[in-house]
Amino acid sequence: MRSFVVICLGAAMLAQAASAQQEPPIVSGQPDEIDRLPGELDSFVQDAINEGLLRPAKPQPAETPASPVADQPAENVSPQDIRPQVTETAEEQAPAEPAATAQIQVEYLCPETSPYDFAEFSDFTSYGDLAQWRGFLEGEERTTALGRLMAKAYLSLGMIAEARSEIKGDYGQGGVALRLLTDLLDRDTRPDLSFFRDVASCAHADGVWLAIGQLKSNDANGADLLAQHFADFRALPLRLRADAAFIVIPALDRLDRPILSERLMTSFTAEEFAQSRELQFVKALQRLSMGSPSAADDIRGYLRRAQYRNEAASALRRHGKAISSELEREIVDYYINELGNLPAEASVSENLDLILHDLNSAVGYDLTLRLADVPAAADPESRERLAGHFEDMLDEDLQSDAFLINLKAMDALMKGEALLADRAGTEARFARAAAIAANLGLPSMSAKLSERLTHDAALALAQAELAFRLKDDATLARLLEENPDSVAIRKVALIDAINRGDRAAFNRLVRGIPEDVDTALMLIEADAAAGHWVVPQRFYTIAARSGDEETQIRALRVSDARPAPEPPTGGEIELTDVSSRLERLRESLGPIPTEVR
Image (cartoon, rainbow, N blue to C red; front, side, top):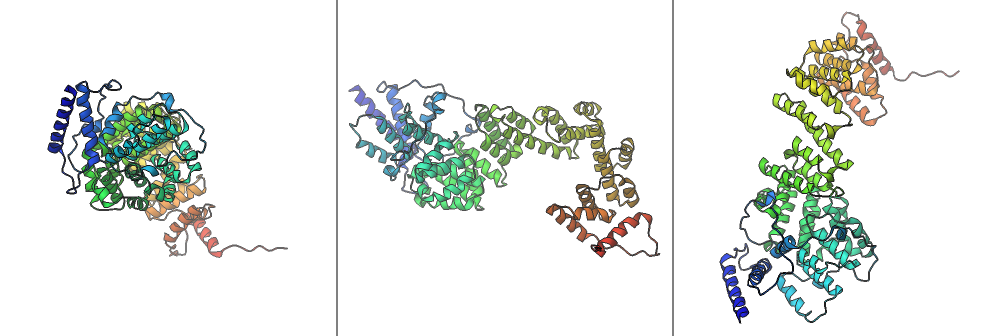
């Protein structure tokens, strides 16, 4: 009797709370049953547990600290998310399976029926459909096959954690297949592409899951494969299709495939969009990729929601829309913390794409070095990308005329020495920074930077380049005199003579300079940029005769811009112009025929 009273009271309180707290739906008269019911059931079950009427299967784990992006209050906007809220609660409370479980490899043998056949659940749209379907299973013996069937039913409604619990301990081929599907749909898990490739080789329709997995891994091949499986995507149950869309549409946006995104959006009806915040978000992403003026404002509304915040901010930055620097840094910091929890063998390629490309303005020197310390980013590919990003920032800051920016780059260069070790250009950057420090009156900083140099010539060249940039002709002349055998410094002086239009200085300095294609192209392009046209014809000829087509085109473009030589006024030709005029005369005559005896 006491139990009956408690249940009645709980039901009454539940109904009262639901009527008082229900959010107004966007579409009048269409409340979203599936969005309210799981949360209400969860509350009711908790009340029953507290009263002793139900016993929890396992103790509740300690509450985990919230991520930085989840601290912001969510705005109460209707309609509700398409994923039932009980799924998120169950996912948080479900005990983690042993690491060995996730790594079990099963040789896939083609079954008679695909484990990813959801035809029986194609009409599932609400929890009511599940309850009605389960009614037909009452009295059925609990078997492995029934557990897999229940898992597919839960997946059809987007209830990932419930599906995972149904196949816990099932290490048969079908159980592994469904468990890997839940991993694919889990936004924080990397898909097992080799397994999905095996499944797709058995059943053509299952290629849709390989395509989704490839897109989740930022593999452009997934876009072309998904285009071939559009009908299979459209045949998925509504909520499973919506979960897949949440993975696919942002990936297609990153890969700049807006037409395919628009096509996928046609698999949802206007009513389905109206009843699902999740679908409205991916629709806004798709509109942003198509250049819709209002899409950015719609996406900004999702920055207040932890579930969408990271993807929304990334999309806005990817399309050149501004977000606050504090928010951008907070999101990057969150991603770095998440990456730090990954094992060393985990792949972080797609995460680096998002951080270094979409959120690059927030990834300064310190955050880049933090990323470099993440065990999962220790592979050569990740190190290469991080070092490249670090070098790009250094090059930009060392070119700046602002004292503080130069100082920041010098400090970062010394801190990032381990990341930049054994890379081409590292010594040149240290030399450039040392030269700038000396010019700014920072002898101790210059000495520290110079200690990293293995050759004094690198420092002298950096000082020459700095003198050229500052138009300090006296320092450049002194360095040239102190380093008479340095071809690199002489090339800097040649460019300086070209910029000043000093033909005599150019002809004096050019002696002993290698007359190769790269040097010739550098000189004639500097000649065209300065507009003084002091470079002799032979360098134009050398560049035009290059075996590289692109170099030929660049050389001919400069030659076409070069004005014709003026005829001598007094009938005399300066000695320095003789070779140039002879070159032009030979060019005008064309090839000289040879006589065969």
